[in-house]
Length: 63
Image 1 (cartoon, one colour):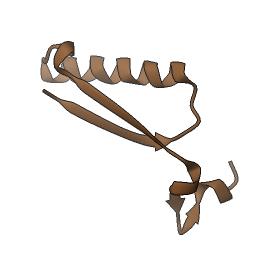
Image 2 (tube, helix red, strand yellow):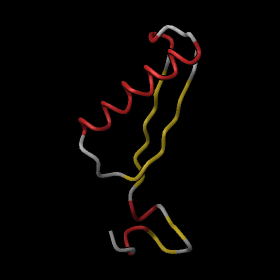
Image 3 (cartoon, one colour):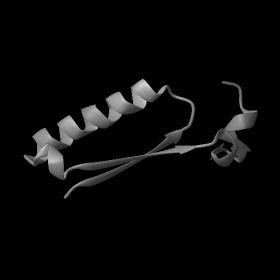
């Protein structure tokens, strides 16, 4: 059973996350010739205060 774990910054609309899960499932299913029912997708949203770039939290960087 394929397991895909996606980590990204929080803040995207629920519809976008749902679409991401659907599209990733479609792609993995087609690529691996695996049934969609066997594919698991986990989306972990990270707070901007817990994601750093160059030693600076994303919450302190300009958007």
